[in-house]
Length: 273
Image (tube, rainbow, N blue to C red):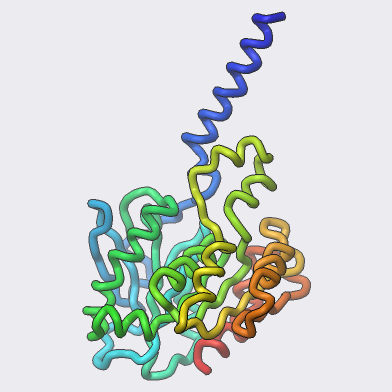
């Protein structure tokens, strides 16, 4: 009996160890594309180092001649890449004073490295002076003129980036409350205790709301989302209930992966207002 208990406990801790070491594969699904991808023809690719690894991001429209007055940073979900945004920004009919930064996480697209919450944040930070120089702006000017959009995991990156760097406007599509809450839903409360990736939209929202420059945060969420429930967006809104800066738009008959296509006109309207 004692020997059986030892075996069971040993197997349990083995599963915990495997979960801890391999949880990144349960969170991130890096997609790659070749240098011959057709979308590359409509963007300007920028290379920069982060953590000893070469990173790539894309500017749209390419080869700007004048510094933009407004810069939108776009962050995709855990299974998408930066160039997935090309059709949306191409259809936006952007103003002449606007630019878009299409961001790939480490290990995604043509970027090197492995994605974690820390490597992604470092990559964003490392890109700021590079993007500023490319657009003919100081880093302070870039931050004050920047806004962010993100879907799913990218919503967390968009809000964290805005909170840390003072972006006045954020659009979150299908956000979760915290990665820990998501882990509890997916693998249970015990395994969630060993989570090594600590995205926390509740905390980031609080930090963003305290910024003097904070202006507007819009949340879109599909009411049929079976991956991240719409209740999580409602929880985020409730945390900022005293603020007129937050608004939520539930999207009927829409799930997690089809929402961007369905809300594209509404997102474009926000961007080009």
